[in-house]
Length: 277
Image 1 (cartoon, helix red, strand yellow):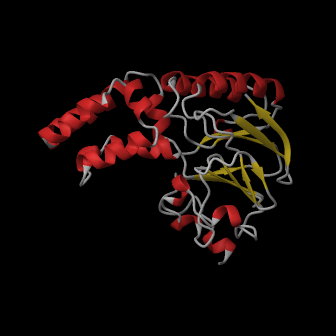
Image 2 (cartoon, one colour):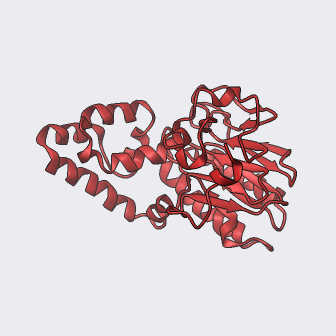
């Protein structure tokens, strides 16, 4: 695999799915949140005290789902962004939000009427945490299952109401529209993803591996081509924070009974600090 050939560039067909961060500075990465507003608010308090001018901030996905405070979590993300970009030396592009599995499911849910087996898809999503997001935006799973039986028009009305309800919350729809698939530094030190990646494929061919990870990711014996370290914010196997020579997992189980973790990476790609809330 040729690292330079496989690296996405802003001149490619889909320039908006990847974010480029400045190398040579400090980057904070926040693990999967999963609707835990209280933990996020507390973590933001610690970040505000620790951040320095010129720092950058990456959220690694899963803002929705599981926890009971989905709306408050999204509001907190938007509020802290305003505080962060008001700091000296911080630019608008210095805050990046990645798409997580929960956000991917939410987008698919809003198109549920096009699924070949909508009832089965919905039940799978509920089993994987989407129920709290549906409730937060005024939906009801039992009502959706009734709509499935009534047909595509009824289900279209149900998903359309969810979209309308979401638009009533300032900034929520916009945030969902700017989520990135991955982020990387321009000096090839760090690559940030939600759940990892398939080490045998280039970034442009990862597809669902960004949301669901790969069984080969945790066993990577060599660096992913083109990067020193791959950082992910979610681990479906719930193994906690793991810091290795080529990969770093920051998922402490927020939304599932655990803490919320953030890590600060230095200019050489090494971790300078870990915060928990």
